[in-house]
Length: 171
Image 1 (cartoon, rainbow, N blue to C red):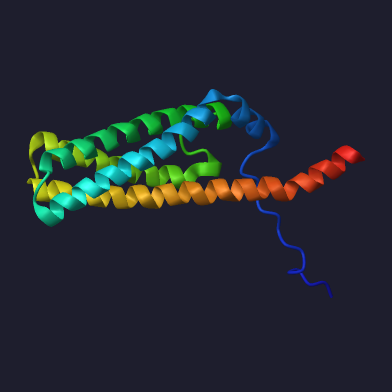
Image 2 (tube, one colour):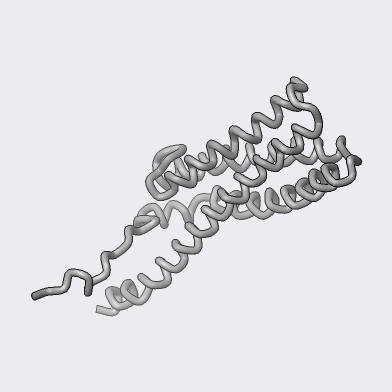
């Protein structure tokens, strides 16, 4: 009797060797690496301003401006991220390696865009706008965590496969 549970099923690679080479060669990887922490910093400042407004009732203009800026930075990182995905995986969105992250990114974009529409059309009062901003920010945090987990898995995968690659080179 063989126990079918003794051999772990190898998990699929996040990147093929060719995709990894394209990822490492494109300047869009550096662009994403710079924009992601900038976006997070903008998010933290804006989150503070939004919460400050909701707690104190003061600073509505600063909070509104900060969410608009955060949304613009989000659009920039989404556009450049789509270009990165096209260079690395051959498609602008929904490459298998980042499919679910991209799906959730659409919700993030929709909520941030809904915020802009609410501000510019005044379909929500300022309190409603700030609550919508918090909803958008919640999805942003979830999506950022998705990417961090995926990229950490990619690093661990590369590290675990490195000894195998070194052994193959030595042979």
